[in-house]
Image (tube, rainbow, N blue to C red; front, side, top):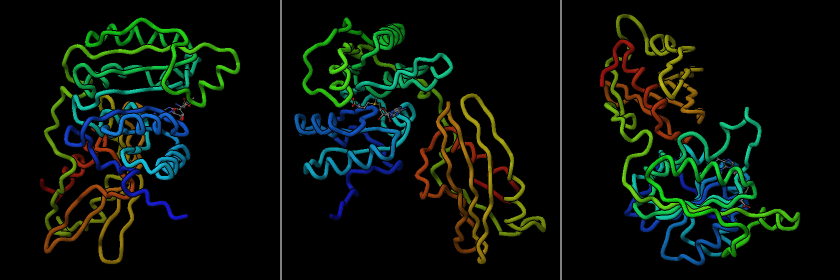
Length: 312
Ligand SMILES: C[S@@+](CC[C@H](N)C(=O)[O-])C[C@H]1O[C@@H](n2cnc3c(N)ncnc32)[C@H](O)[C@@H]1O
């Protein structure tokens, strides 16, 4: 069978906003059955699933196409970052997270989805009156998440419900029930406006735009020489680190520079390329790795503007 995933798998260039209609987001959708339930019961909404596992994304894409559902969109990556970078402010009406991995060990705490800036990220992305609902089999996870949303100041959390009747029971909930475990459900409603954790910062440079280099040879240095100078260089600032790894040159003088960025633990590997345009060379982010335009990625382009012969 031929699967046409074009409308379902969403590249990172896409930014969801109010023009997409009412948006529901599910974080860590696993095999996609709850996404399917949401999409069936809420046909007026676009249901955006975010999942780190490529295998889960593929399974859910097949599931939604097999079910003929046209209102499911899937994005692969860490939900903590994708929520921030792929959605306009205040545009999600409901967000769900069912049975997240609890990462109980202290040294793994950073891996929890509901950690650090999560309440703040959702404050920036949920609409006023929008809700975030967490279902978990781990009581302390429910309590900690509720406390974090309460202390954020923009949410009104409901009391935690024990084994409430749910519209749909997911694979993990079925498994826990069989093992005689409880389910804890807590819903937080956004009651105040306010930007998310990074929205207050203004980016003086729009990293998505092309940059223009003057002549290929400047001060007797070729483009290759000038780009080679950044290899191994690290840019480190609050919240991100970037390193330039490798440089590839084609016979006609086009360059491909590979880089790795880590923004608050969110790692991306991507390429920056040069494209000839008349007498000038354009420097731009290559789409192949589908990088999110995180502060680190933007900083890597800004950094290149400082090499000789490059101007904005
Ligand atoms: C225990 S499974 C639960 C799956 C599904 N929600 C269910 O109830 O059957 C947790 C899921 O969260 C995903 N996940 C873990 N960390 C994530 C993150 N930072 N962003 C998005 N998904 C994540 C995992 O890949 C996994 O599919």
